Length: 354
Image (cartoon, rainbow, N blue to C red):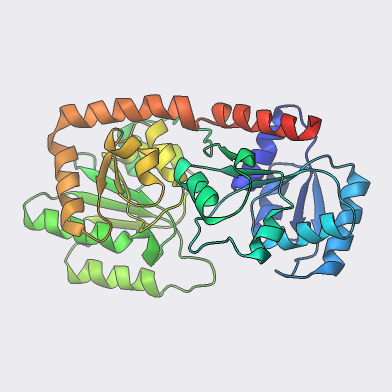
C-alpha cells in the first residue's frame, strides 16, 4: 500500500507516474482503485532473471521513464541486470522497508547495491544499519519517514463505538494489524487478563485479518485463550476495517505490541488522531515516539509491564495528555504526508537533474 500511496501522492504533486506491477497482485488492485497508470509485468525470479530484466528494460524505454522508485528487495536483482546488461541509464531510488538481520558487506551485496543511486531509510536506526552493515556510499543514504494522510471522522466517540460493537462507558484499548503472533495480540490479551485480576474491567478491540496464506491457527488460539480466561465479554476480535478514523475514535489507548516493528504506520496514525500510545521498546517504535516522550514504551514479551503502562494511561491523565500533545506535534513535524512528499521530491529532483 505504501508503494501505491506514494505513487498517488507524487502524481498529485505534478509528476507523471506509471506503476509497474504483476497482474492481479495487491499492488495492481490498489493502483487500479487509485486510477493510476499501470504497466503489467511478469512476476520475476529473485535472482538472475535475465529474460524479465530485458523485457522490463524495453518497457522502461518505451514509457520514457526518467527515474525508478522501488521498495521490494525482490526487484533489486532484476534492476541490477537491467542496468548492467541492458543499458538502463535512469537513476534508481530504493525506499527501504525492512531491517537488516546480518551484515551485507560481502561482494555479492556490494555489487548489487551498486546499482542504487539513492537509498532512503524511513528512520535513523535503519539508515545507521545501512552505514554499518553495508558498503553503500554514505553520501547517498537519506532518512525520510513514511508519511500518513489522515481522514477526519464525521462521527463522535459514542457512534464510533457502536460501529465496532463496544459499550459507551468503558475504558477501551485497541490494536490494529495482521492477526499474527509477531504482532503480539496474545500479549495484549495477557495484559488485559492481568488488569482484570487487579479489578480494572477494561475492554480490548483487536482489528485485522490473519496473515495471507498462513492459515487461522493463531486466530483460533486467541479465541481459545479468550474463552479460557473468561474474557468473552471484554475482547472484541474483528476483521480488517477501512474505517480507520473511527477505529481510533473508539479508543482510550492504542497498543503496538509487535516484537520488532520496522516502521509502525498505525503508530503514526494514532499520533495523528491524538490517541494515547503504548509500544514495544524495539524496532522503530522508540524513534517514532521520541524514546518515550510521545508515548509509553515497554519491553516486548512483558505482559505485566504492558498492563502497568495501560493502568498508568488510564489513571495519570496529566502525563497522558502531555504525551498526546507531544505526539501530535511530532506527527505534524515529521510524519505527515505533506512533509514526507516534500522531502522525497527534493531527492527525486536531485536524481533527475544530476
